[in-house]
Image (cartoon, rainbow, N blue to C red; front, top):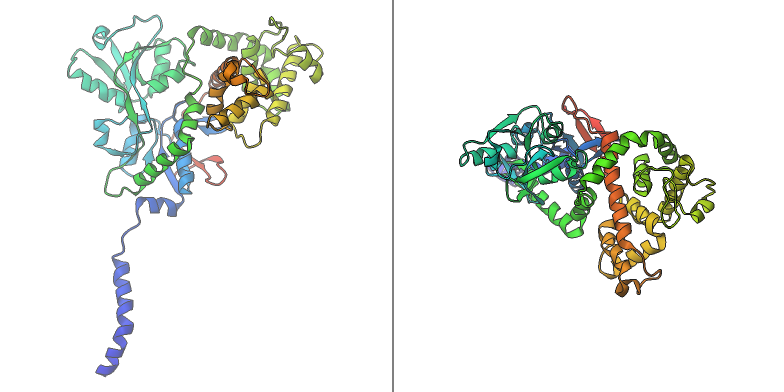
Length: 478
């Protein structure tokens, strides 16, 4: 009997050991749980710089970053946009969201609640007022005026800290409005001052051109994603790897170019004039832009932005070189397209749309949107041959000829002898083509936000994005 028990021990012990090891196996990490569940939950805020719902689906710098990260992990993206920005960090801290991607400045108080990943941008907080309001040169000049800021924001945190040295500073933490809404209230003269991030200001000035910056309230601050505090740093480590990767392969720079590359030079007078013409001139021609865009599979607002850059929507416009009409077609181009009357608004817009569509289809197939449209705009202005020259120069200079952010740096070289002598088509006014594209992009953005503004949802919703298709849809959070 003893001998039989001994012979069974070698068979029983390994099984028992396996059971013991299974009982003490380490629980899955945060990253493993996300991968196993198949989705990444990200909380953010509604704004042009972070996340918005447009006619083409969700967009925004932070949304695109989060979508890239979800794709990197091989999971779906779910986005939560709470009604109040003050709820964003608590949602991360208590586990309702895996991370916050909301253009968050890294501050001392926030570090007490959450853990930050790698910094990927820098912004300054700025005191904003409306043109016509006496501009203060410092906080002490406010003379008791109230500064409205979003509750729980880094702006409120900064003002609290400044109040220790300036006890006369008065501010109000608004529970019901975010930074974008407060900028709108400043523009409507409902409040005198607010504090906003510099990237929010530069985008919103194109929508509300009377907004002005009095001074910076902070030095440049790092921007980073926020994660839950704790010993499990697996998701943070994955984010660090992700940001290192998109820094190295240029995707981060590409995203910055897409959202901010064309908005640095703010022109108050021209922006104000454009917004006025949206209401005074565009209604007469909008049906023509819509019809032409549908016919040639274009965005009517991009076509309208081109028309404004060409003629300020003046059907009788004539240039010194003889191009004329809303889309400023040359006689030769109009003849080639079968356009009989260049000053007829519908004919001109149909001709311009067809010509732009033809150019766009001739752009190299390995160029993806939105760069494809920006290349087509440049070719519409300067000619496809000169665009190809700029792309060739870009490759020669070590850039990517498929990326607008690289090619736009080569366009001005087409006017410099030491460069255009090396090209097939020679001299061209590359600076004008560059300015043309950047102006059209800016007008397009304003038209998008004026005709299809982002609407904050009355309740919490989620947007899911497939890692395989990139398609987005609204889905409930259970």
